[in-house]
Amino acid sequence: MSAPSPVLSPSSPTSRDLLLYLSARFCSSLATQIQVVAVGWQVYDLTHNAFDLGYVGLAQFLPMVVLVLPAGDLADRVDRRLMLIATCAIAGLATGLLLALTLMGVHAVWPFFVAAALYGCASGLQGPAVQSFVAFLVPSETLPKAIAWASSVGQTANISGPAVGGLLYIFGAPLTYSVVLALLCVAAAGLIRVRIRAQTRRQESQISAFRRVTEGIRYVLSKPMLVGAITLDLFAVLFGGTTALLPIYAHDILHIGSAGMGALRSAPAIGAAVIAVGLARWPLHRHLGVRMYIAVGGFGIATIVFGLSQVFWVSLIALIVLGASDQVSVVIRNSLVQIATPDHMRGRVSAVHMLFTGTSNQLGEYRAGESAGHFGAVPAAVLGGVGTLVIAGIWLLTFPSLRKIDRFSDIETNR
Image (tube, rainbow, N blue to C red):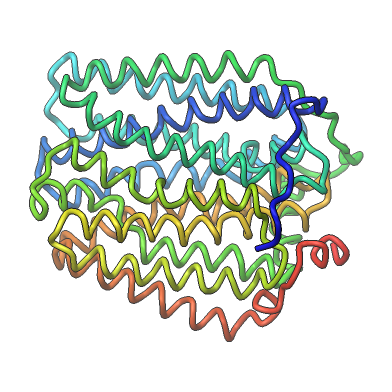
């Protein structure tokens, strides 16, 4: 890392809108994390079935896959703020459904899958707009730093959200879901006040909707380093994702209750937040590709340690290291994608990025739940970590252009 670079100045004309956006993102991310803890614990408490935890992830994954590419085209054609406000409303509807199910004492699990699917719709629609939003708030030379700050805000929410969710759940699911609804309202109110710069648009009136949507795919496929970076994250998270297993570890292996599960859920975000703040102050400038591969390898090793651990503090440290390793990869990859993408394509390329990296979390949860249902939680976690290491090795050989990336300026020059 180089010497510290200055943070975004409060006197900057974009700082007011960036701060508003980061505040809104914090509230929406906090709401999401609180809800994830509540839903996971509630579903497992209803059925004690690992398969059901996987199905929660699958219910979110399917609508995201369907909606994310059209959402990318939409983000290039309409006001991104309106998209994010609308998705807050959809997420609020899902939370309201969960609140109603809880108050009515529903014990059937399938209505919870419906609520998860509705939340997946919100995630699919908001993903491309979120991933490309910061690029319309700051100049390109400060984009990696702004992305790191945005990531640190999100990770701060990811730290506090599960802990808050675990504590709130002690007082009941109705209170937990009510807090989530309030946070989503605050996020929507903040987004209304954000101003973004006008985006460059090409005249595409004669181009069909299908061609516009698939143009992002064609652009990504024309850039081997983008293909390598995006698919590396896809398969690493697909194999190494363990979040769906946390209720099982908390309930049956570590015996730490819902508050303890909240701590486990917060642990990756603690490591990620520390790294994100560090990268915002000391941005990476050299050997970016090599550092990305090292980070993915660290993610896989930490997953194996967590899977084998039966001691709470060891599990906690493993998850902190896991989150820190993942954050290095996230900042490099997100900056790479945004810098390598022309303005008029950001929404659609971000949609392709989201299709692989965003939905991989839910698909990874489904994979983990299915594996745990067949083989048990510990083998599912350990095999996932081993799979991540294997993927990193294969990609190291398959995508030499990714490994050879040195500076972000090299990416912009070759755009």
